[in-house]
Amino acid sequence: MSIDLNGMTFFVSSTAGVGVVGSDTRLVFSQIGERVIARYAGGDVTRGCLVGRWSGEQLIFRYAQREKDSAIHGGHSVCDVLRVEQGRTRILEHFTWTTRPGSGTNVFDEVESAPREPLSLTD
Image 1 (spheres, rainbow, N blue to C red):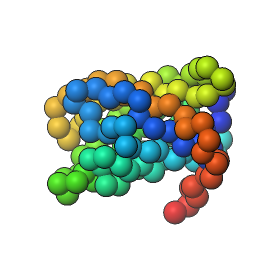
Image 2: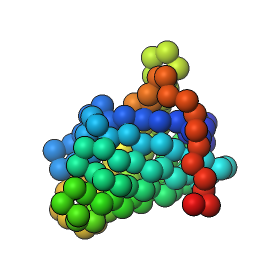
Image 3: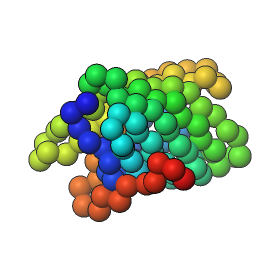
């Protein structure tokens, strides 16, 4: 684990055709050691949560989300976490739905000016 995601906010800069998140979706991460959680919402997602951990240089997690139509869906992801221009962080999420057909890749980019406000891992 080389990048600390604690308090970072991300936007979705690219989504797969079977993805539900979009450019209006924001994700806020918290991290303690190898444990990582994030809450997210925006676009077609009214509320989402991911729970995971670092495994070497990859972030592995499961996610569940409530969508605008009140459906609840989820799946699992393996992510590559990179440093890009001007030191910002990018997450390449390779996801697979477990509640509907499909898989793909989403790209999350760090919001440059967002204050780092971590979530509580005990909420």
